[in-house]
Length: 82
Image (cartoon, rainbow, N blue to C red; front, side):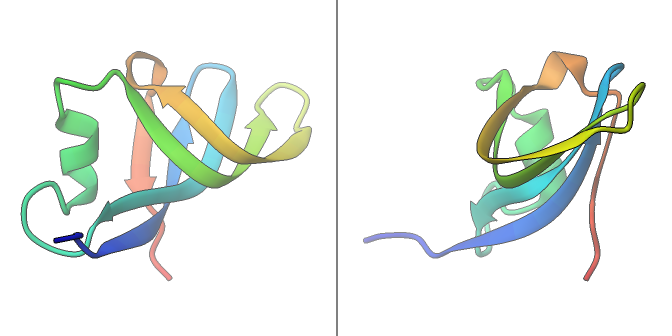
C-alpha cells in the first residue's frame, strides 16, 4: 500500500545562502511534521524540489528543480504558511 504524500513550502538559511523549496512529507502520522524531517538522525540531508537559492552576499537568485541541503549547515528553518 502506497502512502499519500504532501508538499510543504519551506525556508532554510545557511551562512551563505537562503533556500526556499518544497519538502515532501507523509500526509499524516509518522514523520508528517516539518520538524520531524529536520530531527531525523538517520538522514544528514533534506531533499527539496522547486528550489530558489539566493546568495546572501550578492542577492543573486537561481532556480533548481532539486536540491539536497545538508542539515549540519542549516542555521534557520521554518515552514512557509500559505
